[in-house]
Picture 1 (spheres, rainbow, N blue to C red):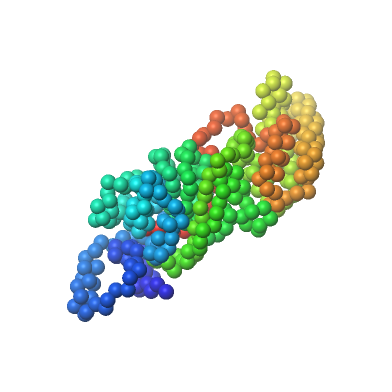
Picture 2: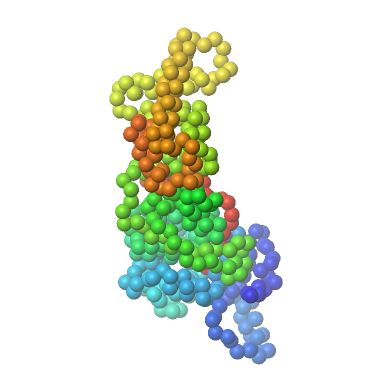
Length: 398
């Protein structure tokens, strides 16, 4: 078991302070006992070293187990011609191993202090010409071309960063990711599993996810509160022909209450009102546009419950809204019944079944996304996964 110095148990204004030497991976070889004089010299040298503060808000913990680091590189199946993207390299324990296996490494690190240490360690090995470091937030960085991803993702940005990779413009062969164990389990979940969720549904639409190994929290310095897992994500060669905006909005609706029957979800008046508005906006005919105007006016009137003395126009609009709502409700329930989905629960459905249901809805003129709004390519993928952030803190390989 890894024994930590007493200084690791002390918090300094929400940070942890460690000598730089502690950040390096432990040697797999057993060292010879040091004499008292050598030990004193080493202590004085450590005291002169700059201390780095590990920010809890950034989940900074150090993976130092050389066997785990070597295993991650081995399981990534790196070719000598590959360019590897590493997110969160920190002080370079993993980076140095990647440089030995790959042709080139592009590292994205937000902490300038870590970047300085990384540059120093790589230069000592004479490998600086094969490393490019981008000092920036990975979520705001436009990644260059790469063949593989090898990264540990802090839990606070796990969902949007996974989304940026699998739905991004850069094609890649695989992504070997060290994640918080609970998050990994959600990513790996299948229909019927208690952990099955919208995250797994959205990722598995475009990629296959494979479990690789678990990593003990004791392999990190300082020791985090949770264990981790390594997963490998491989983009699919072919993905379903579906409008991604529709798909994301559809899965958000279905998995808002994943264990509720679809019939119960789509019978809610508020949900029907929202879908009616979206579906009407999607239609391009002038008749639909006029109906949408009536709906908007009626919907505003319906919300104003404390208004006194409704006008004839409001009464007429309310009547039209009730009629359209009744017809739209029958249409939605008709779609569910036609595919025998009314009594089924989203947590039990495969992607193929969900795709089939979405196609039935769209064919019937029921839509889940406002197609009148322009798509924001920089944020739509991140929004689609934002529900899975901010649950537990995580750590970084540094």
